[in-house]
Length: 345
Image 1 (cartoon, helix red, strand yellow):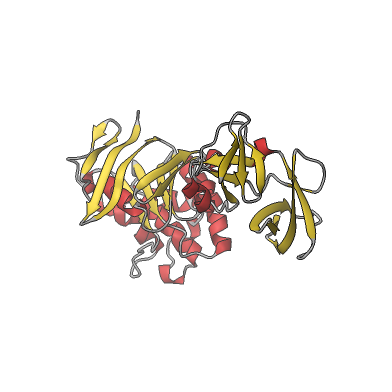
Image 2: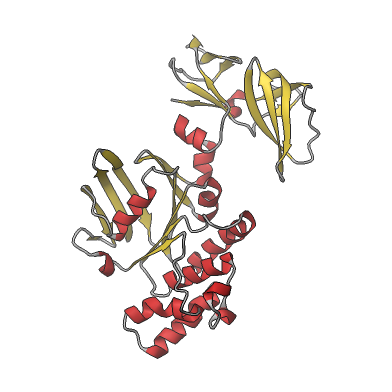
């Protein structure tokens, strides 16, 4: 495969295991998001791929070449951090051209390449501006242009939107993949934010405690989380412990809010996920829950209800415009178990 192959990477710092048997592939021209909470090993993984930190064991291959003996400055990889690290004594063009000068390019080539990448990130008219006069979003795009200018084989971005406000983050989440795809740029995007990871990349690696918890498209991961950790990390909180199998032959289980048929055998100790977006208000359905509304909240494109069902608080999302009951009201919720319930180990 012409791209990045990460195989069985292991790294410890003293008694702390930072990475444990981490393996994944990334084809050239693709964007991969590495998603996980703080301390899960995301940044350590980037530093190992970049050649800044050696692994204890495992291999990293780029375009068929083992990188073990290749120092960081010869890998042709770019690394962009959250802080941007722009040089305050240089204007925008000089910041972008810095890496090109380090490559000993000719002045005419440096000027042309600098113009090209500034145009790519929508800053053609900003070349002579002092970086201290730029907004947060403009500085972020300058940092991106500087990272792209040397045409790295692989670009790695470590929490690049972490310091930006929500409105700016949402705009750049749309712009970044367009820019990278226009250059056929292979990239790894590291973040703790699910929305960023899903918006930027076609494939996502979720990490937990130094291990890979799940790999897939954003749709696959959200619709079918592979574990209790992944479901919780994605904010799917309607988790129902299975107290005992009620009827193994019929695939029925007992939970704190009732007995459900999941269509297959489920062992004791499993958990059911009741998806918050697969429930209807009232109406007929294969399964109906009765509860009392605790809270109603508006979230832009969706509305959220927190409902008490048999002493268990559950959260459900509905499209904005749906008529919702008020806190204190009793409510019936119907759903198809085959669509709304998922078994997690």
